[in-house]
Amino acid sequence: MNHPVLEREALHTVRLTLNGRTRSGQTRPRLLLSDFLRHELGATGTHVGCEHGVCGACTVRIDGVAARACLTLAVQVDGRQVDTVENPGGNDAVLDALKAAFKRHHALQCGFCTAGILMSSADWLQRQRANGQVPDEAAVRDMLSGHLCRCTGYTPIVNAVMEVARA
View 1 (cartoon, one colour):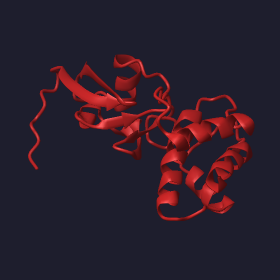
View 2 (view 1 turned 60 degrees about the vertical axis):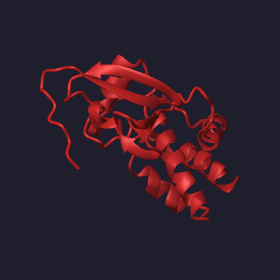
View 3 (view 1 turned 90 degrees about the vertical axis):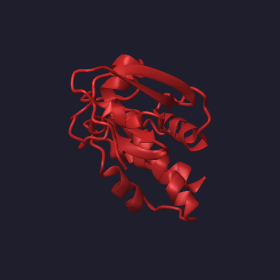
């Protein structure tokens, strides 16, 4: 597959489907998706933590698969579907169930890492269900190991994810 070489300082138009809506914006080739979503498209639900892919706060779904927005260039999502925690259309039953469960279990804490954890958890739970699996607590904790919560309150998060997993 041949990709055109992008001019380093030129602005490029990126067209994508963001949370079910067609959107576009201008970006230079080196801009991170997390910055493009926040500053060009105003989708501020995606948080930027470590900018090294370690903390997981910037996790979004690209074409349905969880990905770190801080490790993805904005130009890479041209023509693709990107879903963030905002999901204003409310068309994601698992994500909506997780949001409600996080509230019930007081798993929102300070909220900085919550967006990324919700997006990873939704993707992971949908894959578990597609494979006919109901994860146990150890599996949930293993999945969450890709996220850093500085509130150190993983127990409410695990309980919320487990509630949705068992539903």
